[in-house]
Image 1 (spheres, each protein chain N blue to C red):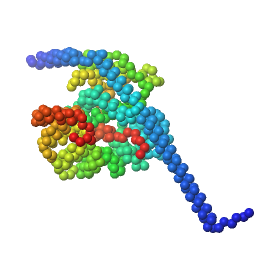
Image 2 (image 1 turned 135 degrees about the horizontal axis):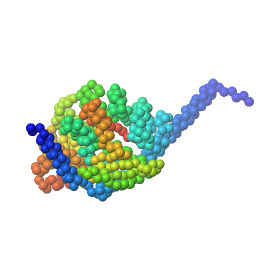
Image 3 (image 1 turned 180 degrees about the vertical axis):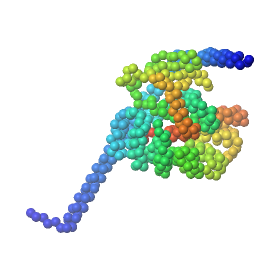
Image 4 (image 1 turned 45 degrees about the horizontal axis):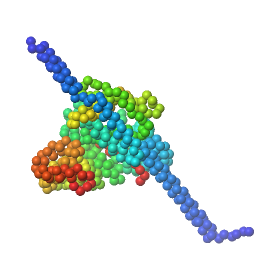
Length: 213
Length: 282
């Protein structure tokens, strides 16, 4: 007798909650112009850093890391990438994983940005997801590739400051977050949480190019 | 006209010729070595200008001729995909060449490459072999990594005492992560004696190098007088520095200590913390 009403109430409740959530989230989304200005600002600072030939590669990367650290929500990204394993981590493992993941991500992003002096960066448009996130579509044009590389930046308000912050980068339709999550899932399945932390520690500790001794 | 040459004169001439040849070949070798060093430095200058293709153009022939540092750098370029397509196998091949010449950085990177290979299983035996050699040559980063491998027992038999010994070597060389870890090992008595005073001193060393986690730990120890003389003002100083670096737990701990320090003193400590740089006296 009470079998049918229950699910109906449940479905109805979920719909109400989702709708309320969407409305609330929609209200909190970053306005398109602000999101564009934010991404444009990040890109301009990165270009200026890369163009500064008075700095060493290490100094440039340190500046880029700082830029990315302030522009990317590493708490959100690291949690998402760990997936269901996040809840299984102890407080110590969470802290180690988050620190190492942040260090490694910033290091690898910073190193990928180098060596493209002839690249040009253009804002194409913004795409509203209808939720709290907004995508800023950009195109990176380089010699020999006039069509350019499509790069979408997923931006949302920071939980701490309310200012825009990046939570994903989608290059030619491939989400860095999803790609990273898949790679980590394989390591987590094979070696567990400590294995993943160990992997990140090893990756972070690698030496870069050295000068003459 | 026949000129008679005595045996003594003949020996003298041969010796002179030999000396001349040795000197000349030494000069040639010295010149070649100097030219190679100059070329290597040119490659490094190109690398610093972010001209990665230019750097590779200079380093590749040097690497092929056996220059260990050029071989190592070629490996890093392939590993990071700078100026060339990213290729882990080629990176490892170049590092192996440099590692065979006992270049510590190459030994370290080579060992790391065996631990986590794209699409392949780890080869712990090889990783430990090369990492141990780098650690033996005194590379702090390798000593620390090897120590952590032994502590965790990943791919090697777990040996906390040996792991702690390697981490301590790295800590003694000033590696801040190793110092922080020594703090935890001494605090818990893992792999060696428990010593809360030593633990506090290790945390303090790492904190002075700007390590946020260590700044939080030493802040808490000052607040509680745990292994170090109780001092709320010093606790507030370190917890402020850790909080400013975004350490979440330090932010909570800082709030607790804040209530125990006078407002005037709080402002003065905050000013000092803002001006503080790693390595400076606190």
